[in-house]
Image 1: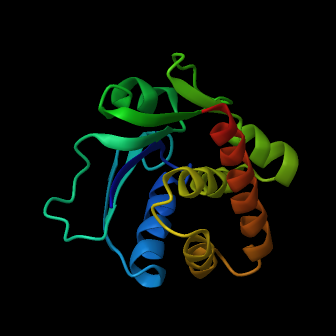
Image 2: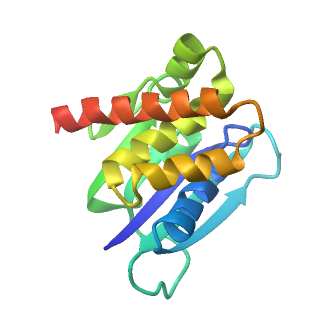
Length: 178
């Protein structure tokens, strides 16, 4: 098993943190191998950012994603830049609240759900992580949940668990459409 995942967005949306959590879930709780790399634009907030995660049960010889099996875009810039750098059978997801995409992408109301259902836009990245975990099956849901709880600030555990559950539910709706 080998999964290559790219999370693209703007600085401040938490995609790098989501990538770190995903890699930690793989290594710490599922006993897999993982690499996680990240890059930012020149601005810390609002500039382009991406996280790349490779998860495998075999050694990983190169840490960068060549062709993503799953691409999640939380910004239009990320979608425009990376939508063509995916494998032939890749799943492309976009935050439909923020991104206009072609018909080959699944549009999900990630940020809208964070704001409307949970009252906090800041957990959109954890909703997105729930979608990624459910669709890729790269790590177990339990491992992801445990890694989330290891990383989130004290006092926000319940909110982040609810956000993760919203993402799992959202991914289930996609699976029904595929």
